[in-house]
Length: 395
Ligand code: SF4
Image (cartoon, rainbow, N blue to C red; front, side, top):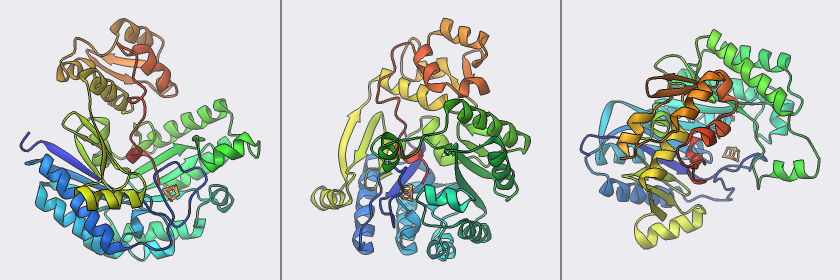
């Protein structure tokens, strides 16, 4: 596997407050011992490096939680160690997720000096009422100011917006999206609000404190998003991610193209040599595990060829480039990963495009991805394969 590409995900599990829609591994703590966390993350990283020797490091992604709350010196130490453990690719992409408040924006210059070359900013909305509804700790004005600071300090900047909130309309979302497309970034992550089990929003919906947007209205907004971003030269390259050509997140492409990635830090998931790896989620448990074992692993699961192929199918169909069904089957030594007769039926109904053994969702198909996966998989998709790793989700 010498020289094979590898991505590195680093999870920082702390936030200043908990957003009501959030089901990520994020925790609020009164005090954080940055030195202890730097040492634990470096030890966890060294453990993965021992198991993945000789790789070419193509990307690092600091996700969370709120990794812009990390000391820039901690970020620099992790980047430097990763560059020593593995040979860095010439165009190594180093992304960090940030929230747009003034405290964090003040660190952008130091984070750029630490080696971060791409910033992903969690703006989420341009409207103060929507930001309050989403429980965000920043205002729209702070968001715009942070974006400006980010664009001064990083060559590549992306931001996230959440749409399909209760009461969202075609007029309102098209105005917001037009504004988003005018702000000069080369990448946008546009997520529909989903009510995840166990979140405060789930409780509020159960108590009828608000009702999610009707699925048909959400689908209309999704189609509008597709049309407007394509017309602006930032088409979707993944269900919720849009970029100018060449500005796609290389890190997330590794997930979706089913490459290996080391995942360190609390709750970090990884994919290492046909194994699924998972770290302790609770920060305190993670620190004790590192002190005890020299790493934060809680679980390593060997994937069967069928499970791995299922995952590759689930992840790859999210991409507009789609998947090569025969190549994936060959990679995992399987006769087939899809039922080609059913694929052809979905081509005829306008949900899939097929060229040889390459298949991709059409815009109509993108609205019903889960149903299509259930329909075309050669064997029923396992529940685990159907769940994307938390690292892919916005913060
Ligand atoms: S959505 Fe992001 S900022 Fe909010 S609690 Fe979750 S991880 Fe933290």
